[in-house]
Length: 238
Ligand SMILES: Nc1ncnc2c1ncn2[C@@H]1O[C@H](COP(=O)(O)OP(=O)(O)OP(=O)(O)O)[C@@H](O)[C@H]1O
Image (cartoon, rainbow, N blue to C red):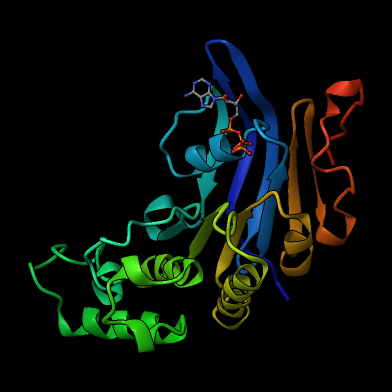
């Protein structure tokens, strides 16, 4: 199959006044690939995602999207945070939140259909009218996924979205994401500390360490990926 890049990162560096998070980071993400970004706490995973989302200006290097940034819609699923039981929006309203008011104060027919599709494909139809605050942890995360999918993204970023979900819910969420990845060629970036989950679903990994980074097919993810390299170990660039 011919590969076509969705984004390339070249010679990327991010420095904060008191320290350097990473430098000379280089990788390409091909369309339809499922990349897992792993690394110990403080290695720079969130910083990299913020740079990809243009929320942070790199100190050096470039991030290029193809054919151009404007053509790429990015869906974002955040870390699980337990919404208050009193959270008043229904699951359906929550899923349509980013659409409301873009063109009109109400949803167009096409937008309503997109919401219905997102709700159906994330298995939320039965609870669509329920307040989101009353949903289970897994259902809440599926609602975030549906909210990200409703805009038909080309790139889906899961930012520790499975942290604090129980095992069954984690696998349920990732099964769904993998289905979109396979069936719709959705490109996925999955930031996680959960190595077994990354190994089961990702195609490749980017391992950030304080002393460098490694890239490779997921089968080659080092066993010590989450162990600090500050103990004197050198990390090679792939
Ligand atoms: N705005 C900022 N100013 C200064 N330092 C920052 C800023 N944002 C992040 N950092 C520091 O940069 C380093 C990388 O942080 P980052 O949040 O990217 O790590 P992470 O790999 O996502 O960690 P975790 O797994 O704990 O979420 C950390 O040492 C953090 O304290």
